[in-house]
Length: 171
Image 1 (cartoon, rainbow, N blue to C red):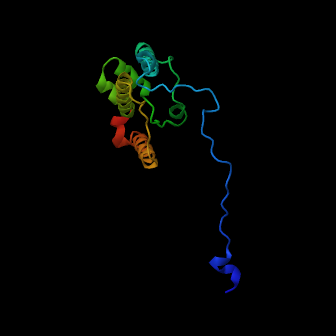
Image 2 (image 1 turned 90 degrees about the vertical axis):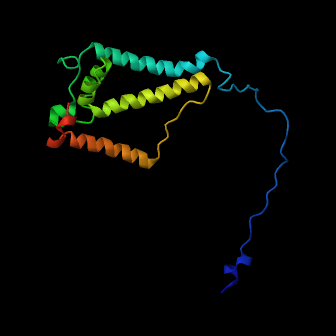
Image 3 (image 1 turned 90 degrees about the horizontal axis):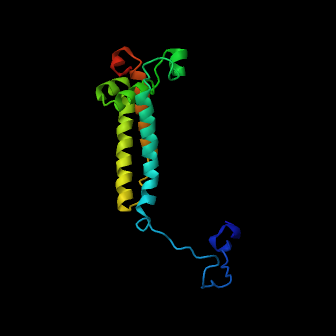
Protein backbone atom coordinates (compact mmCIF):
# COMPACT_ATOMS: atom_id res chain seq x y z
CA UNK A 1 0.00 0.00 0.00
CA UNK A 2 1.57 3.31 -1.02
CA UNK A 3 1.24 6.61 0.86
CA UNK A 4 -1.11 8.21 -1.63
CA UNK A 5 -3.87 5.65 -1.02
CA UNK A 6 -4.07 6.16 2.71
CA UNK A 7 -6.83 8.35 4.05
CA UNK A 8 -4.28 10.58 5.80
CA UNK A 9 -2.67 11.50 2.48
CA UNK A 10 -5.88 12.96 0.97
CA UNK A 11 -6.18 16.63 1.85
CA UNK A 12 -9.57 17.72 3.20
CA UNK A 13 -11.54 20.66 1.90
CA UNK A 14 -10.21 23.99 2.96
CA UNK A 15 -12.50 26.28 4.86
CA UNK A 16 -13.18 29.36 2.83
CA UNK A 17 -14.13 32.42 4.73
CA UNK A 18 -15.69 35.23 2.82
CA UNK A 19 -16.80 38.64 3.91
CA UNK A 20 -19.15 38.62 6.88
CA UNK A 21 -22.89 38.61 6.16
CA UNK A 22 -24.32 42.09 6.13
CA UNK A 23 -27.52 42.56 8.03
CA UNK A 24 -29.59 45.54 7.18
CA UNK A 25 -32.39 46.68 4.90
CA UNK A 26 -33.03 44.71 1.68
CA UNK A 27 -31.42 45.97 -1.50
CA UNK A 28 -34.63 46.43 -3.51
CA UNK A 29 -38.06 47.92 -2.91
CA UNK A 30 -40.08 46.24 -0.19
CA UNK A 31 -43.39 44.83 -1.44
CA UNK A 32 -45.84 43.79 1.25
CA UNK A 33 -46.97 40.18 0.95
CA UNK A 34 -50.70 39.78 0.43
CA UNK A 35 -52.05 36.63 1.97
CA UNK A 36 -54.85 34.65 0.37
CA UNK A 37 -57.14 35.58 3.28
CA UNK A 38 -56.61 39.31 2.80
CA UNK A 39 -57.27 39.22 -0.93
CA UNK A 40 -60.71 40.41 -1.91
CA UNK A 41 -63.47 37.89 -2.46
CA UNK A 42 -63.87 38.96 -6.08
CA UNK A 43 -60.19 38.44 -6.76
CA UNK A 44 -60.21 34.97 -5.15
CA UNK A 45 -63.30 33.90 -7.12
CA UNK A 46 -62.13 35.29 -10.49
CA UNK A 47 -60.17 32.25 -11.70
CA UNK A 48 -62.69 29.54 -10.72
CA UNK A 49 -65.51 31.70 -12.10
CA UNK A 50 -63.73 32.00 -15.45
CA UNK A 51 -63.20 28.24 -15.65
CA UNK A 52 -66.85 27.63 -14.78
CA UNK A 53 -67.95 30.19 -17.36
CA UNK A 54 -65.84 28.51 -20.06
CA UNK A 55 -67.18 25.04 -19.16
CA UNK A 56 -70.72 26.42 -19.01
CA UNK A 57 -70.33 28.07 -22.42
CA UNK A 58 -68.99 24.84 -23.92
CA UNK A 59 -71.85 22.78 -22.48
CA UNK A 60 -74.37 25.40 -23.59
CA UNK A 61 -73.04 25.29 -27.15
CA UNK A 62 -72.99 21.48 -27.28
CA UNK A 63 -76.42 21.37 -25.64
CA UNK A 64 -77.78 23.74 -28.27
CA UNK A 65 -76.08 22.33 -31.38
CA UNK A 66 -76.98 18.63 -31.51
CA UNK A 67 -73.98 16.42 -32.37
CA UNK A 68 -76.38 13.66 -33.48
CA UNK A 69 -77.17 15.70 -36.61
CA UNK A 70 -74.45 15.39 -39.26
CA UNK A 71 -72.48 18.40 -40.40
CA UNK A 72 -72.13 20.32 -37.14
CA UNK A 73 -68.95 18.73 -35.80
CA UNK A 74 -66.02 16.95 -37.46
CA UNK A 75 -65.93 13.16 -37.44
CA UNK A 76 -63.30 11.44 -35.31
CA UNK A 77 -60.32 10.86 -37.64
CA UNK A 78 -59.44 7.51 -36.04
CA UNK A 79 -63.00 6.28 -36.50
CA UNK A 80 -63.17 7.56 -40.07
CA UNK A 81 -59.83 6.05 -41.15
CA UNK A 82 -59.83 2.77 -39.22
CA UNK A 83 -63.34 2.17 -37.91
CA UNK A 84 -61.91 1.94 -34.36
CA UNK A 85 -63.57 3.92 -31.58
CA UNK A 86 -61.13 6.09 -29.64
CA UNK A 87 -61.65 6.77 -25.91
CA UNK A 88 -63.22 10.13 -26.78
CA UNK A 89 -65.71 8.87 -29.38
CA UNK A 90 -69.21 9.75 -28.28
CA UNK A 91 -67.96 12.51 -26.00
CA UNK A 92 -69.94 15.26 -27.72
CA UNK A 93 -73.11 13.15 -27.73
CA UNK A 94 -72.44 12.45 -24.06
CA UNK A 95 -72.03 16.16 -23.30
CA UNK A 96 -75.22 16.94 -25.24
CA UNK A 97 -77.21 14.38 -23.25
CA UNK A 98 -75.58 15.52 -19.99
CA UNK A 99 -76.50 19.15 -20.76
CA UNK A 100 -80.11 18.04 -21.25
CA UNK A 101 -80.09 16.10 -17.97
CA UNK A 102 -80.26 12.64 -19.57
CA UNK A 103 -77.62 10.88 -17.50
CA UNK A 104 -78.43 7.41 -18.89
CA UNK A 105 -77.94 8.53 -22.50
CA UNK A 106 -74.79 10.44 -21.53
CA UNK A 107 -73.36 7.36 -19.82
CA UNK A 108 -74.32 5.23 -22.85
CA UNK A 109 -72.52 7.57 -25.25
CA UNK A 110 -69.24 7.76 -23.32
CA UNK A 111 -69.01 6.53 -19.73
CA UNK A 112 -65.45 7.78 -19.33
CA UNK A 113 -66.50 11.32 -20.30
CA UNK A 114 -69.31 11.29 -17.72
CA UNK A 115 -66.81 10.23 -15.05
CA UNK A 116 -64.64 13.15 -16.20
CA UNK A 117 -67.56 15.56 -15.85
CA UNK A 118 -68.07 14.49 -12.24
CA UNK A 119 -64.34 14.73 -11.44
CA UNK A 120 -64.30 18.23 -12.94
CA UNK A 121 -67.40 19.21 -10.94
CA UNK A 122 -65.83 17.92 -7.72
CA UNK A 123 -62.60 19.79 -8.35
CA UNK A 124 -64.47 22.99 -9.15
CA UNK A 125 -66.59 22.66 -6.00
CA UNK A 126 -63.43 22.23 -3.92
CA UNK A 127 -61.81 25.23 -5.62
CA UNK A 128 -64.86 27.43 -5.03
CA UNK A 129 -65.13 26.45 -1.35
CA UNK A 130 -61.43 27.17 -0.81
CA UNK A 131 -61.72 30.47 -2.66
CA UNK A 132 -64.70 31.51 -0.52
CA UNK A 133 -62.86 30.60 2.68
CA UNK A 134 -59.60 32.19 1.56
CA UNK A 135 -57.70 28.91 1.41
CA UNK A 136 -55.05 27.82 -1.07
CA UNK A 137 -55.82 26.85 -4.65
CA UNK A 138 -56.20 23.07 -4.88
CA UNK A 139 -53.51 21.30 -6.83
CA UNK A 140 -53.78 17.99 -8.65
CA UNK A 141 -50.56 16.18 -7.94
CA UNK A 142 -50.46 12.60 -9.13
CA UNK A 143 -47.63 10.19 -8.58
CA UNK A 144 -46.28 8.38 -11.64
CA UNK A 145 -48.09 5.20 -10.59
CA UNK A 146 -51.39 7.12 -10.63
CA UNK A 147 -50.70 8.44 -14.14
CA UNK A 148 -49.94 4.90 -15.30
CA UNK A 149 -53.15 3.63 -13.68
CA UNK A 150 -55.18 6.39 -15.33
CA UNK A 151 -53.60 5.57 -18.70
CA UNK A 152 -54.36 1.88 -18.16
CA UNK A 153 -58.02 2.65 -17.43
CA UNK A 154 -58.30 4.74 -20.61
CA UNK A 155 -56.55 2.03 -22.65
CA UNK A 156 -58.75 -0.76 -21.27
CA UNK A 157 -61.84 1.39 -21.93
CA UNK A 158 -60.72 2.00 -25.52
CA UNK A 159 -60.01 -1.69 -26.17
CA UNK A 160 -63.11 -3.10 -24.47
CA UNK A 161 -65.53 -0.74 -26.23
CA UNK A 162 -64.19 -2.01 -29.60
CA UNK A 163 -64.73 -5.69 -28.73
CA UNK A 164 -68.01 -7.55 -29.17
CA UNK A 165 -68.58 -8.15 -25.43
CA UNK A 166 -67.99 -4.45 -24.70
CA UNK A 167 -70.51 -3.11 -27.19
CA UNK A 168 -72.46 -1.56 -24.29
CA UNK A 169 -69.59 0.95 -23.97
CA UNK A 170 -69.74 1.90 -27.67
CA UNK A 171 -71.76 5.01 -28.54
